[in-house]
Amino acid sequence: MEQFYEMQVAGLTRRLPLCKVSDELYIGAFVIFGDVELTVNSARDLLKIAPEHDIMITAESKGIPLVHEMARQSGENTYLIARKAPKLYMKEVVSTEVTSITTAKKQMLYIDSEDAAKMKGKRVLIIDDVISTGESLRAVEKLVKQSGGIVAGRMAILAEGDAKYRDDIQYLEYLPLFNPDGTKKEH
Image (tube, rainbow, N blue to C red; front, top):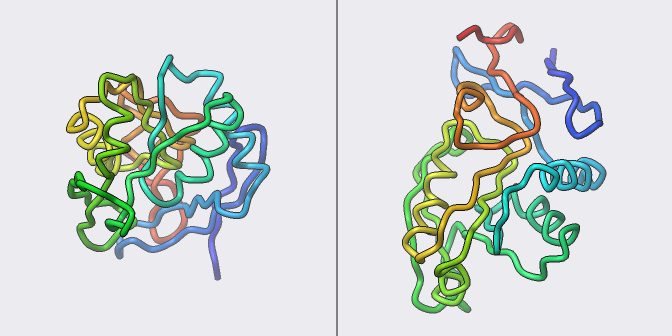
């Protein structure tokens, strides 16, 4: 029988299916892809608490609709995406390694010199859908700093697990980790 975790986020109720990460750990699958209402409301609420910034960046892929909507709502015409693979159009690629709770193996993130130039000397706001271990966030932050950008802030819709104790991120709601029986893990 499939288990769910019901939560409130950005004024909406969503039921997240619980997914097995290991024999002892399950997570609530939070997916904004295809959920326009959730994306629009989350972008609105994050912008209310966003620090001053010049440009926003996210890691491919689930943060893309969120950063797009945040840019649209705030009247910004440009945002950046740290890609999971170098693309043919990318020149003078800058890269860094990332390990994530939802990804089984190490990955790389890439930006090109044009995007790096857009961050140089600028206040860069890092956006993600969920911050858990913080590895994806650290990788994007490394790209920002390698490009000469200044990290203006780190934001996500949800802080998962121990991420809620971090004082260097802003988020809308807390997402607990789960035991195999669907109960919340105690810290």
